[in-house]
Image (cartoon, rainbow, N blue to C red):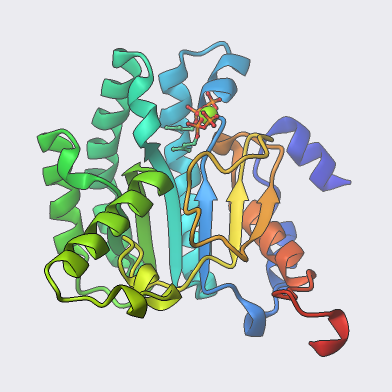
Length: 263
Ligand code: IPE
Ligand code: IPE
Ligand code: MG
């Protein structure tokens, strides 16, 4: 009852309710890696009669909620899709606002990251980001490099096809120079040529905004990922939404091609 009210009014439910959901999570079956397509900032802003950039600004609160909730639970990797290679096609004013917001957020959140022992990382074509953004990102990555808790991975100037093509190029170069036997390329070798090398595949992929598509995100890595599409806009995302998605994930049967009886 309270949940319906809270969802409609877009307010964070009372702590007791949040606690209740959190206690339903099976700590033994926690996903090691959760990936999120943070979508719906623009539509949220439009609903409020605000410019799109205000949606991005309000999305920062949701980033903090998701990161804190995942870190508190003991999730090892949280990957957030923050900017795709296709997002450059947006109006220049929006792209510039997003880059400025990124730098501002990184600088403002560094203390929270360190207080929570979170290590910041990035995947994507970072070298081709604007210099100011790249420098701020690199600074924050260095500042948090010694943290041993959750890895917060920002997918920036990222697309899965870009990543797959890069991996193909890398392996082809090694093969052409005689360092790699093409016959030795298998799942593991290929995965190690991706930007997510060393990370477990995300067991759970969440997308907000109600859109049911992947939009060029982690295509290789989500081969057996469980998908969760939430009808809320990203600025509305709170800890309880992450708890709910994890509970939903934990009630699914992951068969990996086998039959139920074999599990
Ligand atoms: C997600 O929200 C943020 C980015 C893609 C950078 P959108 O900006 O895509 O918001 P909608 O989907 O237009 O509502
Ligand atoms: C996906 O959202 C990219 C990010 C969340 C960064 P988009 O809003 O760009 O995706 P489409 O265009 O609706 O598929
Ligand atoms: Mg969108």
